[in-house]
Every structure is written in structure tokens, then in C-alpha cells.
Length: 325
Ligand code: SF4
Ligand code: SF4
Image (cartoon, rainbow, N blue to C red; front, side):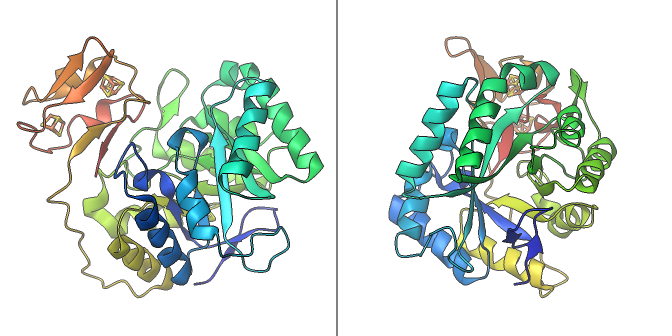
């Protein structure tokens, strides 16, 4: 599989990449050996780029998958690992970096991001965490630093931050989950911000090309849209099966059958408890009364017995907490 240079970094990444969140305990909860086998299979197919996070609790899968791989900093052609943390302070981020090194058994981390930067106040609140990432980069423990975000404003801001090497934004053709200010943003607005960042030399890889599973039925359209955007070096996709790796590899190599249509009949709607803010919008949107508020937990939940997987609830969620898989 061909590789793309990630912005101005020295990293070359596959145009499609493996989001490891899917295999972990908030989604498929695969046994470690099974998830690790999937990662190894992806590597065998030419996918060399993997995204995880402190919050995902998926480091054991990567550790197991990479235990026989030379992951020393200068090993040629080794997989590229990105992780991230929600840490606010210097100390929280330092803990997150040390934890990632230890739990993935790495001596250097290719990319470490501030996870989920929202608007300007959030960036300002996390200055301590950012300073920590800059210090670890200076020490050579982290190679490149940046942010992940759903916000147009944050992507635009990063174009002006010289220390930021990498931006990991949310984008899909339907604009699902894109935020701007305190409201919704559009795909066009995010695409323009991405272009600006790419012009400033940032490496950019995209998340949620399939809109949290809600656009998977338009598989090729979803991937074509994101991969055609100026500045996108790779598309990070949550993967849980070998078949998904095969199709993505075929897509990247231009051999995906023209009539390929994934079977989405067994997919279910899920609400990520870590993301749900309990606003209740989805409860009112569901035409089947299949979503209810769990008052004790302060979050929405789905009654799968009556959910028709129509997907109407997902676009109204302001934080993209509703996913289909
Ligand atoms: S997918 Fe449709 S039926 Fe199911 S919870 Fe969402 S809106 Fe309700
Ligand atoms: S719309 Fe999103 S944030 Fe609001 S309750 Fe539903 S899942 Fe939670």
C-alpha cells in the first residue's frame, strides 16, 4: 500500500488507518489476543497507522500486537502509533505519557495529542498539558504533538500554533458531529479549516468519515469525500473485523469492487457513556421512544428491543455520542 507523508513530519502513513477504540471494552470488548491478531492482520495488509487513547483502555491490544516488532525509534518501516489524553494539567499529561510508554512497552511515541479540544477556553485551560507534551517532545520521547477535535474553531486555531505538528479532526460528507462555536458546523467549514492547517504544514488525519457508522451504507461515497479533501493524509477508521480491513485495503489500493455494499443489517445504535452529556435531545427525536434518560447516570440509553436502527437520533446529538456498529 502506498504511504502519505504526514504534513511536515518525517512520518509516512497508510491512507487508511486503524482506530483501535472499536476492539476495546467500550465497544466490541474483544479478548486481547483477538484484538492483537486483528492489528497484526492490518499490518500484514499494509496498514501502518494506529490510533488509540488513554481513555480507550486499548493499550494491551497494541502491546500484544507489537511485542515481536522492532519498535525502536529508528527501525525502518515500523508501525506508527498515535495516542492522546484528556489530561488538563501538566501532571495529568505527564502521567498519561508515562502510562502510554509503559503499557504499550514503547521507548518512543510517534504522536501524542490533546484529546478532544473544544473551543478556545478549553485550549487555554489545557496549557499545562500542552507544555508537558512540548517538554516530552524536546526530550525525544514523543516525536510529534497536536490535538484531536470535533470543532472547526480548534482546527482553525491550530493553523496558527507553530508547535502543533498534527491535527486529527472530525469530518464526513454529511457534517455529522461537526461543531462550531457553541452550535453545529458544516462539512464545508471543517474542510476549509483543514485546508488552512494543511497549508501551515500540519499533518492531518480524519476521524468519523462514516459518521459513527451512520454513513457506512454509503461506503464509497463516505471514503471518497474525505480522501479527496485537500490536506487529508490518512483516514482513521474504527475496525473490528478482518473483512473491514480487507475492504479498506482494497479501497486504498483502488481494487474495491465498484458495487461493494457493506451489510449493515446487524448494526445497532449505541450511546457512548463517556461522550453523552445528558441533554435529552435524542430522546425527543426518536420516533419510537427507544431512547430514555437514565436519570441515575445522567445519560441517555437505548432500548434495543424497540429500536428500529433508523438512525434519526444520531444527527441531533451535539457531541456525536450516538454511534452505529
Ligand atoms: S435509531 Fe431510530 S429507533 Fe433507534 S433510537 Fe435512534 S431514532 Fe430511535
Ligand atoms: S443527544 Fe447526545 S448528548 Fe444529548 S442525551 Fe442524547 S446521546 Fe446524550
